[in-house]
Image (cartoon, rainbow, N blue to C red; front, side):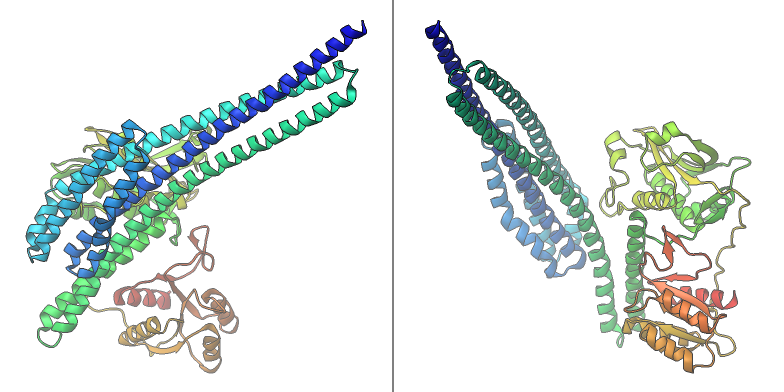
Length: 619
């Protein structure tokens, strides 16, 4: 009997040690598999990073060549030479990374051919331009061969990235499955070890030591598993960061491209005006007009970026959308052209909308221009208004939508329409399906940001070869609509000063302050200036009469709003006009201008300054 018990104890110990050994071996094998899967994940990240580098080199070369064609300035060729010099090494590195994947290796070979052809095409255009044949170079760009090659390269890059994402997802799933099996196996092994330890009572000390050793092994395996999971989480975070940086790169690249083009116009035109000022005043004035146009386009770009980011200062009020649409008829006829038939369907009993009327008009005009561009051979453009209610069910399936009553303004065209993948990206900044030079890609993003900042909602309905409808849902105002202000009168003479009116200009940027002072003196005002808020308060103490405080908002030590509040403590009737290029919290809260605040956005023209100053003084 004793021998039988000893045999059973020995068998139990043998089984226990076998289970422990199996658990440790299984953990080691699974951990090795996890490490291999982790290395495959890292391989995917390297391939994705290399794909982004290849695209960056292509875009550098294309941007440099186009910058040179636009500005004819050799400084813009540096990105082209850098991209051309480094693209071969980037492609070689990519082929080496995907050599073990036949499909990706084939795609990399195709990408190499496409990228080489695109660089060669850029070189042809550049050679023509450098031989001073810019007209032939421009024709080569407009031919669209280079764009088609670039689109093919982008498509190949996108397909390779999609394949790497698929591989990453599959490897991630495999890693999770192995982790689950390992965890289950470790738990079962631990239970079996403890059960056998209880059963084998004759040699408790030795079996207890074996159990402790087994526990240590299990803890080590679990630690390895935890580290593997943490590494996987870090890899996923790295992928998300790469995708985020790619989106930021697209945005900054678009801003840099458009601003460089506009600065090329401004700098080049002013340089030519300076050279021609003494010899040919007429041509110098034409150059100055060109520079003004480029600067105004740059100002429009910053306004659109602020609208997209929901940071533009809005002045909402109760607006009759029917009257607003009706008042745009002449503007739309001039803008859209005669081959587009414009129809309006205005709802009876339309609620007032609580919105910035000028910005809503800009949004409708943007949508109408997009509709016109979608109908190159003519068609019908329909502008419609209606009362609507977005219920809880709709709000639950759409982000940032609050259930309630809205005024709907929609623009429908009978143009080419958009496929689903274009609709998904329609509101992305600098995303456009139009040809080169036919769109900035900021129109819809500006509309989207403005409506969202106003507490509204935007929805696109489109079908290829049928047409597109964009619906703007703007908040309803409970009350009567205000009368729309008449259009700004066009007059040759600017509003000027009366009765020796005195204006205090406060601006910390010296050049901007001098420009404002000169402009106001040109309009006949007596101007006193200060470089900061403290100096302005001193001027208010010693100057017996000040009719208007014209102050920047963003200044060191004390902002313009605090300065105005302190000035009004001493002079309650003092009129204030604020100006800034961007502000968030001083006079703008939740995207809306504070009540009874007069504001002039930088940059401004002499006419805008004259009208706004006169408006504030006469209020």
